[in-house]
Length: 99
Image (cartoon, rainbow, N blue to C red):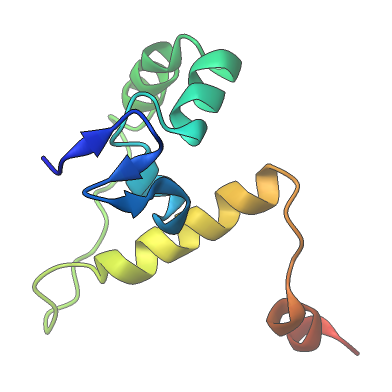
């Protein structure tokens, strides 16, 4: 794991420069602290989710793709987290949904 400092840096890089999903790797990051305070028993949520999906069909894997575009998935999750935390939509989204 990268050199983690208690001063809000990871390997000398400010934590704020990491994606929110990247920050979740570190227990003392602002997003980890927020999630721990607001969802203190998240393992219960994960267990409930896993129990509910047991009977569902597995996702289909495209033939010509070996693995998901993890970067795009991470960006989508990061964007959704930021919106959930009260972030603004941004000009691209506003322009994309404007009449």
